Length: 246
Length: 288
Ligand SMILES: Nc1ncnc2c1ncn2[C@@H]1O[C@H](COP(=O)(O)OP(=O)(O)OP(=O)(O)O)[C@@H](O)[C@H]1O
Ligand SMILES: [Mg+2]
Image (cartoon, rainbow over the protein chains, first blue to last red):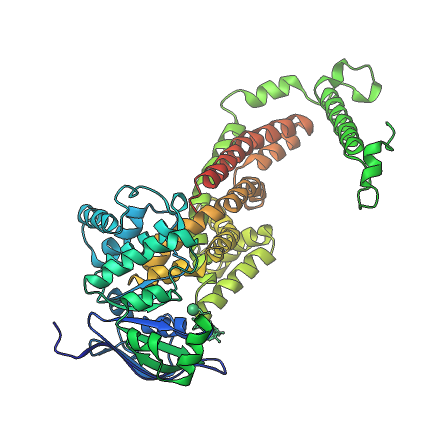
């Protein structure tokens, strides 16, 4: 256990795409074992926030720290930091030329230098954990969207990350497949994984989130426990957003 | 030709259809038939001219005693044939390897690397292979000053260098096309797992890009076989130079031509079926 209070810290983070100011002075802390659900209208900067967290995008000012280590420092060891931050995408992005097992074991073998047999054994365990113990040899094209997304979660977990980022991971799924993915995320939360979850699934947010973070126009508008948010948001914009949902 | 005003046609009126499918089918059959007849007639004159009672055909065009002489080992044609296969195999390997690097350079995020690769491709696609072969074979030794060039039989190395420089440009473009067809998310997913750029390229992007590039690279390999004919200008003992040798000794153009044509096809036809099979394996094996 770290003696630091927060696992992830965003301090006055600003991000521009050309002229567009996409993240405006974001201050945010995510505690260890916290499930931080991020919601907000389309274009409010939720994906950008997550992508800056593992440096798929660069910020222009401010700082993001992981367990006290500045992620956004120019001299940061990006590849090493990314190993500590798992990310799951809306579009799965599984490697189509590798089996489920190959997808999950690739990075541990390549990056951590874990022996192949050990990495495959571990991958099997992870796939079992997401309910795909019988699909280890399937290629992504042979799996349903829900199964692919669960493989993607297992793939991220294989690097033993300290925090997991989920960017609308159920948005591309047929409605009947959403549940199986949310269930895996729910289990993960119960096991104490620190998670930042961008989602439109308000049921999940209400049930699993420790905090709800509302973004609008690149600003962090409100950050409250879910009970309070869904009952009576403290800000006008929170109330507006909620009224549109209902 | 049959009437084209069927009831079928009436239905299609108003569309841009010019002729009915039936008419087109008959037309194409007629063209193909005429073409086949012409080719057969030409081959008959070529091979059986001596037996056709037309004055100008004379002794015919293929001299069978010369043909036997050409095909009896040891014959320069076999050596030339093996030389062509040898230089194709070596140059195919080197140009594919070099081409992968050219392709990687083309998609590089470093402007310098990207520009250099671009310039390379523009130069070697923009100048004739014949020019490049001459530049290598005559130009490089000239850089050393008269009589100072250390390599004795420069024909072979020059052939491989010239063909590789040229075909690496084409293979490189095929590889670039393959890489660019892979969705951005693949690289992001690999990088997110902590894999470096090179690792991600090697393990994730290139294996997929390669599948997309196989048909284009295969076609280029067939062109490579035919490009060996240009090596005749750099004194590389290949098939065209054998033809020249026979022709200047016998003044018989057709007999050695027939042999040379057959020997090229002996390489390209099997190669093309291999390329086609590789392409279809890639298609059915595509796990997307
Ligand atoms: N690569 C990019 N180049 C330029 N502008 C971008 C880029 N990516 C995102 N943006 C802009 O940044 C803003 C925030 O985008 P972002 O994708 O973070 O929003 P979001 O909250 O995730 O929206 P959604 O709910 O639709 O996913 C938008 O205005 C978007 O147009
Ligand atoms: Mg988004």
